[in-house]
Every structure is written in structure tokens, then in C-alpha cells.
Image (cartoon, rainbow, N blue to C red; front, side, top):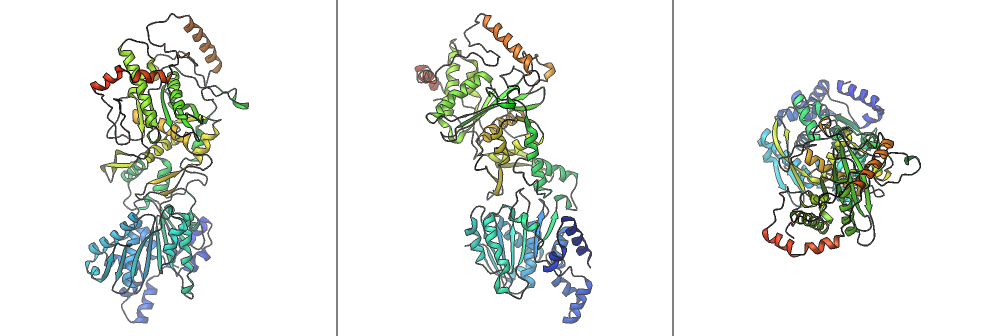
Length: 636
């Protein structure tokens, strides 16, 4: 028995597979005795037979390509059911393109179907085939008699073999697979199968048992992918005894070194991403985008501000508007009356180096919910004194303008020496509207070279949130079952045409609170550096070490709740006895400050007055923003 076959037997035993079933669709790996036997039978040289029976040898002799050791094993395996679970940069596309060339040049009338989730991936394989032929053996190019791109990529050769490329889609369902199922094939190759719609894949697989091929071994099938982390059809076939699985992480490459390892971890951005992309691991069965263990570890026994508590949680400390050594950022996801606007406040505690969700609210009043949400945001900011706010730009243009107008009105009042609320100044300069459909550019390192990478902003924000969890830097309340279910139900069912994950929320739990928290943490990422250093839009932001700060005026409510309540009461009594100073509304650093509410309607009247009109006439100086921040009309 060939050494490769002995390894296969040991791997099947280790994974719990029935090796006898695996080899039913396999002839074993051919060796020199097999080549000599066939050469004597046909009457030709052993080398000629070896090239015909050994794809790795033919590729080496005719395409000037020397396969890596794991590619060599995969090519020499004769199983007609192969699943390639390989990490990034292992050469999946390269070796499959070479194998396809081998088949069409050594077999007459060979019909090959290549199926991909997007047309761009099919084009990549098609281009790779052309390049291998041109660079390795240009003489082979003369055998191509047809090479078209419409209605699909197709190559036809002089020996009547052909290659066709089809897009089965990422969300097309069974209809997308039916288009492929109508094609005749000797080999079906599915690239990035884990990102193909499962219904489409299920519609394609019946070709493997084509009744027209009764008496033959059947259609050869090869699927390759880097795991996405979900239990898809590819996951099922890898655990099926009828399929031979080849699992090779990225470090299987002979030229893998510490530098490539460092680059891969940097490019992955999260541990889960590294496990999937480079180790080609499945992940835990119950994991989605956020690992279950990380989510559970992030839960702590405390209550959000103004959360009355229930049963066992009522004795937990309640988060309070805290002294100035904490930093707060607000995140807001706008929604209509049905789902309600979600408002969150995340605070950074320098004593623990933790980012803590201190407040969460869903504004779901059926009428005027968005207007009420704006008013509520103003109140919340006056309590927490957030240094900035990050809001969803997709559904909140009017609210964006209203909040900025409140900030400009406060600036005008301040300039004229009239009474204003200091916290409202934040809305003028530190309100950021974030477009979830935008893009962000940052610098990274690939192949020991500094490159600029452009990714969808939503993906960047999700990966940033993942990193907070993986580094155990984020806390939320142990009683917050809604946010917990939203985190656990967040998945990546498919990829975009450009290969980026597309995220999906659980239908029951949704993702609105998750988006609001993600916006707040994205704010910390931008203002503190965080996950990645970006080329632009990096605000000056530095935390003074805790030991050099003014000591907080109140004890920690999470560790000393009784002392906190006592000190809070003493401070409240002291503030009530203090005479009023100046015209600014006092900044009371207490749990529930007495705030003079200014109706938004009155502020809007002053905004339309001559003062603001003259301010617009002088010209506004809007903040410079990157592509993902929508520019506000500061002059209105």
C-alpha cells in the first residue's frame, strides 16, 4: 500500500470515518509498478504512462509547476469525491486550475463544470488557467478552439474537451443550482463552497448520481473552501464517509515562516477570523460571528442606569453617571416605530481598562418616535456628558440636522453670554453620522509590503466588535438577554461578489441593539486607535494614567454600592446648598442630576431666527470626514 494511502487510513481512523467506505470510490495512489505494468501492456515508455496516470507529474513536465507536498498528495489521490478544506494562501485555485488543464489535455471529450458563488471567482479560475498555459507551455494554447465570456465563460479544445463556468449564487436558492444541474459533466468543481447558498448546492449534488452514467464510476466531484464557521453542506460532506477530506492549514506551505504568521494574524484582525481563514478550522458548533464563550464571559452582574432590576438582579449595583475619569460615547441605531430607535452609552473605565455598556434604551413610541428619540438623546447626553456620539446615517438625516442645530444654538448662546447647557455643545462638533454601506481604508502589511486595504465599513465595525470580545475588554449586563441573543444569533451565511462576509441577524432577536453598541465601540476605535491604525481621520485622544488623575468623587458603584449610595446622597445635599455660579447650567456629577429641560420646539424657533441666519451667512466650516462619514449641512 502506498504511504499516502496509509496516511489516509490513519486520518480516517482519527476522525471517526469508515475507511472502507472512503476507498470505495478510489483506486489508491499509483506507483512505479502500476506505471510499468501499463507501459508493458500498451507498448510505450514508463515515463509516458506516468504522465498520463499521475497529474502531479504531468503538471510538472508540461506547466513548469512544482506542486507543494500537500498539493502533490491531493493531485495523486484517485478518489472521485474530494473535499479541500485549505487555509488562505495555500494555492487552492492554482492547483485546481492546473488539474483541470491536465484533464482536458489528457482526456478526449472531457466535460468540466466550475461553479462559484460569484462571477469574479469564476473569472479568477479562468484567468489562472490561461496564465498557467501561457507561462508553462504556450504550445498548448493552439489547442484552444473556442474561448468566450458570454453567456458564461467557456473554453473548448481540439480534442472536444470543454470547460464551463457557472455562477450558482449566494442567495439564489434551488433555482440557481437548477441551471447547473441541466449541464452534462464528467467533473464538477465548486470553489468557495461554504459561501454558496445551501439550496443551490443541494440542487447540484444529484448530478453525481447521473443515471446516464450507469455502469461507470460516476461524476468526479471536488469542492474547496476556507471555512466560514457555519455548518453548511460542505461541513456535511467533509464528515461523510463517501468523501475524502484534505485539511491543510496555511502553515502547511513549505515557505511559511514567522513573518507570514505575523502578517496572517494581523490581516485576520480577530482570533475567530484567524481560525477560519488560516487554520481552516470549523469553530464551535454553536458559534456565529461572536464566539459563545466570549459572549458569556463578557456578561457581568450589574444593572444599566435606570434599570429597576427584578428578582435576583435587584441587589446588583446600578451603573450611574460617573465622575470625569470615565469616558463615554453614545451609539444610536435609528429605526421606525416598529423596532424603535436604540440608544446606548458605552463607558471606558481606566481602573479596569474595560469598555462597559452603562445604558441601553429602545424608544418605541408609535407616534413621533424619532423626534422623541432626539429629545431623549439630549437628556441622556446631559446626564452622561458623552465626548462624542456615533449614529446610523442611513435613517437619520433629519435627526442628524436637528441635533447639530441644538449644538450650534448652544454655541450661539455661549458666545452671547446667555444661559446654555455645556453638554449640548457636543452635538455641534462631535456628532458623527456613520454610513453602514460605506467603505473604509487602512494600512496593513502583506507579503512584507505595506499596502492600503479598502473594506466595507460594516465588516470593519463587526471585526472591531469581535476583537473587543476576544480580548475580554467589553462588559454588558448579565440580565441583558436581548443583547445576548442578538450577539449569538449573528451569522455570516454568504459572501459578497467581492468576497467579503455578508452578515445576517437572527429573525427573532434582530440586531438593532447590537448595531447601536457597535457604533459606540467604533467611536472608541476611531478616537483611541483601537483595532487598526488608519491613514486618515484619527482624532487626538489620549487617556492620562489613572494614578495621575484627580481621584473620583464617588466610590465605584460596582464594587462599593453601599458606599456609593451614601456618598451620592451627601453630594446631592451639598450641591443643593451651593449658591448658583455664573450663567451656565451646573454640571452636577451625580446619579440623577436635576436638569432644566429646554423643549426642542423652543430651540428650533431660535434656530430659525436672525442670529443663526447671519451665522450661515458667514459660512460654516464643516468637519472633514472620510468616505464613511456623511457630511452634515452645518450651515442650515
